[in-house]
Image 1 (cartoon, rainbow, N blue to C red):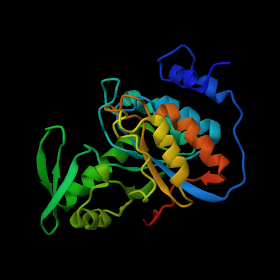
Image 2 (cartoon, helix red, strand yellow; image 1 turned 90 degrees about the horizontal axis):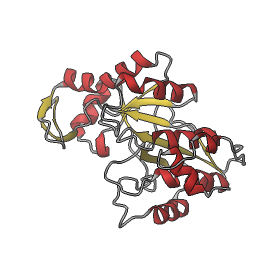
Image 3 (cartoon, one colour; image 1 turned 135 degrees about the horizontal axis):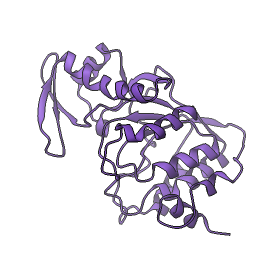
Amino acid sequence: MLPRRALALGALGLGATPAAAQLARPPITRGCAGTLYLTIDTGWSREAELIAASMARHGVRATLFIANEPTFRGDRNLDAGWAPFWRARAAEGHVFASHTWRHWYFRGDPAPGRVTYASRRNEGQEVLDQAGLCAELARPIEALRAMVPEATVLPLWRAPGGIVTPGAVRMAAACGLRHQGWTANGFLGDELASDAHPNAALLRQNLARIRAGEVLVMHWGVRSRREPFGLVFDQLLTGLIERGFCFAPLPAEGIAR
């Protein structure tokens, strides 16, 4: 029998074993000692199929924050080529929310009703007014709806990096959207450098510190991380379920941190 790591590598396209091998194992069922809210931001998406297969096997439903970011395939997350992926996630019961369209960062409030919005990839900077911010937050959802009309979308949003300004929060609220970050122990660490934060250490830390009610955050893959976090994601779900946790999408009103 192949070890867990070999199965995971195959699902990533780095070995011969298909992702379906993980789905062949029966789901783990336990009692519920507390609820966790897994949220996934878009990102590089290299491990997207592997992560999705693990969630399906465990019956985990998450909240997917979507932005039109570059992917490992040379396209972007909300290009038409990703439609089958998003349709499959909606069919599995995952829900969606906005992560902005361009995935730029909020840098300040230069005046009432204005927020500075800047790229970290040297793509530019601009000051958004109320209409501009609402359009930026609405555009990823419009793209999703064109691909997956039946998708469930929550009235929530998440700023890139979770970085907001008071003005951005107020202006987004005027668009009908509440900002959702993550809780103190909810950062799973997939954005950290793997030489200093290897998967084994992240897995240990997360299993030890996560408590009921946490809003967890991760990505479908992070380009800069050399050891893909997706390789231990199935072990993380297994460990959390064995601790008695259940998973649920965020409620429409979000979770206060």
